[in-house]
Length: 250
Image: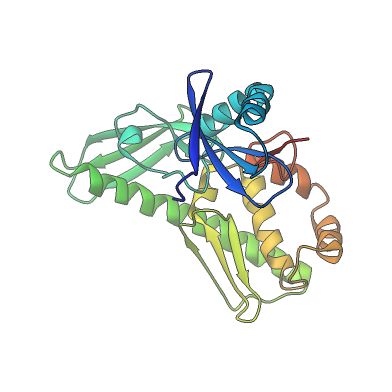
């Protein structure tokens, strides 16, 4: 994690300030811990930064609420908070309560959509770390099943072929496409979001097999295959509009 040049205390909050060779102020809320970060031109005063941050206070509050209730690529899907029912386990956009009950040595997982619970039956002596790995493996299998069906559906419709694809943890991206190898990777965190979001990412990565860059041609292909892709992108990011990960100063 890059160390800020200095910090400011604004409304009892510690704000990390990064001085850069830029023309405008940029504000973001760090997904990992909710820290307020400002990228600022070297010529802008601390007083101007304070005014800028305070003017965006409502936006900061909305971002923190979004981060608390919507999983992000950086946020672990299964951790101690989930296993102790302090935080929900997100599955296809729905918060589930993760319940651990006594069972055999070989874990058994059952999801109940009606009660919004995921029950993990394991031996009492099973360490929490192992339970977490078991639940994550189950989530991976669930995502793999859904992704396989979507790729099988969309690739022929789009006239593309995929040589290989897989699922892995990614810190900053929902998916990647190696055009030369015709290989696609999907972020494991997608299983936490609604099915429409997963479909958007699959179509997005398949479109890169038609156009490598995010240019007008790429957007035209997306408009053709998935006309509401912008709304799905916004839903995935938990934002009221697309591409709003940071707030720009005037």
